[in-house]
Image (tube, rainbow, N blue to C red; front, side, top):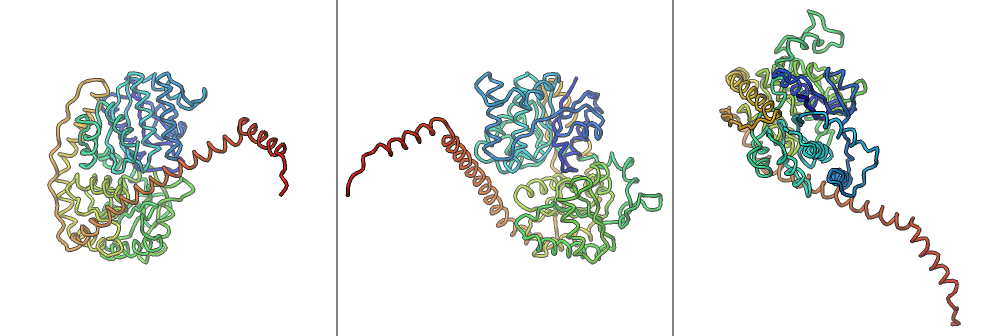
Length: 499
């Protein structure tokens, strides 16, 4: 069986989490005898080198809202044999041939089933449209669905999810929304890369230099497990002014370093390899504002980053996959959500292990609640590690059962997914938790409204741009030129009247 796998890979800006989920998908399928895969990528050569598999070009959707809506409509019309706006050499034609040569399609896990990343939502919708047209089975692995699905995006998501034989939702809120859109084919699961860190530890962690060094690792310089803290912050600071975010994050990490007596390792998850940017830029600013021992690392591979994160003593992050990697290693973790979308993902990942209380909203960074949470987590680190390790056998079994289900669905076998038991909660003790909850009640609805307003603004700007283009096209047309000539002639022929 040949399976096409679509992950958000081959981007100019390397994204640890996206590569991690695709690595996991390739590994899990191979462990179940599915070795014939082709990865759909934006950089075929790079992907082949990284993953050791076949690769083929995916399609890239334009970013503006109106443009990616129009492109999907053209693809649908083409597949239906109707009038369309696709050129004979459009990128979709090679993709159709790639999928024609496959038996099934797997959409790897991710956080792009929403309007925040609408062009990625529509890319996935297009791949599912093509697969459905060709009669290929589609499975959609662990997704965050929503929370923002603006305008037509909701119908696009519903149609895509409904055409899959199996859909995995990695948070409770995604499961609820997914079932509202597409029914019982949407089932709960963990993130695709939930156990990539543990499978990568033996092969990658020993190759990493120790914190505070830039030289290649030696037997003496490999960081011992539990000998450092990890911080990972998205290149975005959300609604917080950047200088305030940097100052508050630096102080939080300084305090954590003083509390633990350990150095801080800043591990980026998005940057251009060899050039930096995104997380690396923000990390450098935070490190410059700190007084504790700190090293701001350059972007590393998904496996290396996962392994280093899972060996830390404590993880503090505003990104999603550091949570996944840390909990794989039983590492106590505190997460900071920057907006509603971020909160859904981070709290969902933490709640899967009963640790949802330890995700705090952005205002907690400035108010000091984040620092108080870190203090509690550090004091209870043995209890937290014991809690996570006690759940691990069940979570590993749940993940294995999910991937068994994925392969059976790809093979066309009807599947019925069991419902995993919820994880027992480890409750926060400190008063900071009530402060964080109060901040969340106000902050997250405001963040959701802002997200929808931004999308509505993008929609209006797209409509205005389209109207201007249509008007300009009329101005440039031969019909308008004729009207101008007739108007000019009429003006010249009009008799003059004396005053």
